[in-house]
Amino acid sequence: MTRTLALSLAWAGDGAAHLRGLMDRMGDDAFAAPSALPGWTRAHVLSHVARNADALMNLLHWARTGEETPAYASREARDADIAAGAARPPAAIREDVVSTSDTLAQVVKAMPEDAWRATIRNSQGVEVPATEIAWMRAREMWIHSVDLDVGASFEDFPQPMLCELVGDVAAMLSAREGVPAVRLVAADRSRVWSIGEGGVSVEAPVADLAEWVSGRGRSRRVRARTAEGERAEVPELPRWL
Image 1 (cartoon, rainbow, N blue to C red):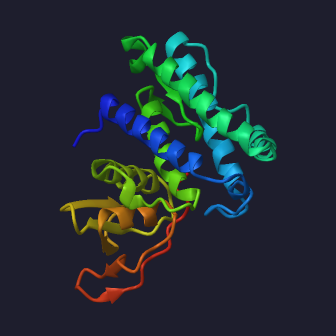
Image 2 (cartoon, rainbow, N blue to C red):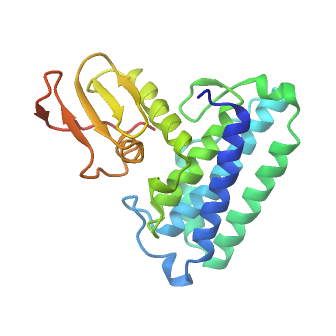
């Protein structure tokens, strides 16, 4: 499947609704509880989701006008905004997540068709087409719904999106030096991706592969084998973002 703008927008919208539903079912006392991300509470995750919407609106402005507006002023400013946002009352965080998500959707809807063909730079400084902005938001919504640690899992993702996510991470890691070579095999989708050349084969259902390559844990179903079919240790992968 070729990842299109329409698909990315649909996944982003569905992911926003999914995350909002999880947030709405959280009691106020749940916001201060630890999330699945080290050092972050659930309030941190939700504040990050809101600031991510602002960041992507900056990139959409860049694509629409040609005026260079990076996603974040700096990594330090990003982290400070998240920390400050996490200290707010739950009601304020809920309102922030909803309002920024709705505003982002309105900005996306108003984007001229030719603006999607512009080139911008993502948070890693890599030049990408503006259509990637929709994919960035889709990733954020679905992965951070799991990071909230309130019962969501990678099994909730649209299956085609899981394949796109594994391929995306594999491509990013392949571009770096010192990353273990791995052949990723989706046991339930007849799909294979490679990180580098050679290496062991790591096989699992695609939801488990996506969880592992994105650094969100490793289920018992993730297993590695050598080219000769012998059991092997599952390699450690670095952070992809």
